[in-house]
Image 1 (cartoon, rainbow, N blue to C red):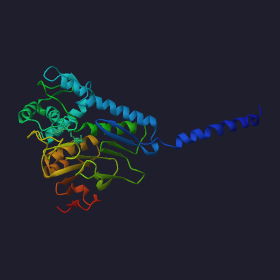
Image 2: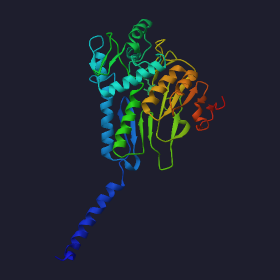
Image 3: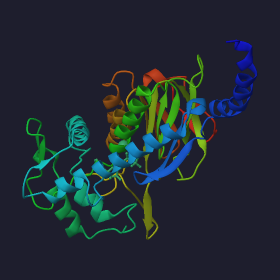
Image 4: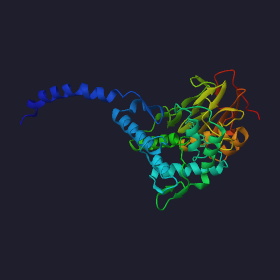
Length: 345
Ligand code: ADP
Ligand code: MG
């Protein structure tokens, strides 16, 4: 057989195929934004982004949201809450991991961070559309139900038991961090080494932006919920998470009430802080620490952060003074002159 006979056919077929193949390889899928976990989430994988990867990542986010949300009707945390005072409930591996980590932070903060604060969170209704300043009596009732030491986690049986009727877990201060880590693990297993996972401002920067080039992450103006970046820092392979008084809040009679509640008062935590940003290799840790450090205030917060390896923090106070952990000295750039970096003390 003369191979030349087939040559023209091959050439035509190849020409017909090449443009389509070429286009689908060259053009990545655009970054994907969707509303999940009660917030706006964006995943950006740059040139490596495909519709399939984004589909997979968002599907996983929806599963985690359903599992871990206290407000879902059918999720695992909702089931555990429904079993309060009745029976131990089977807990998913994900729930056990997140709850155990949350309880470690409760220990580390002497109970300031408390995932059993659910009844109080529900009572205040901040961000749930039912916000109001509750009567003192109801606050006291909700507080009486809280107490992280009461939670019975049985790792062997794989169950969680809340011993008093009305007790309620709320993993809202840590779930997004865990979800970001999970998405990063999923994407890594698909060969992704670089990208941004942004779950409502809970950022995980995978790898570097380009070889040898870190990501630049902004810290938003903590005095408003819509502000632009007032500081920036460069990171690689780090999660950057902020907790502050303008993330979710309402105003009543000229007073500002935000969503990080102090279990010792039953009211939004009040101290010198506007916000705390944590930079850490793990997003679950960054998320739990940002809420914890906010609750503890600057001095005790800095001390807590220093116990975690490779973990740094930026504290912004109500006078717009900025304190950072030691490892960040000279590495935060103020983009707005109203914010004053106290690097010397
Ligand atoms: P965001 O959800 O805006 O990222 P945080 O991570 O700081 O903010 O978490 C705040 C959420 O954590 C609240 O909406 C509530 O669900 C829950 N929460 C409030 N107070 C506490 C607390 N003292 N300990 C643990 N969780 C809390
Ligand atoms: Mg948090």
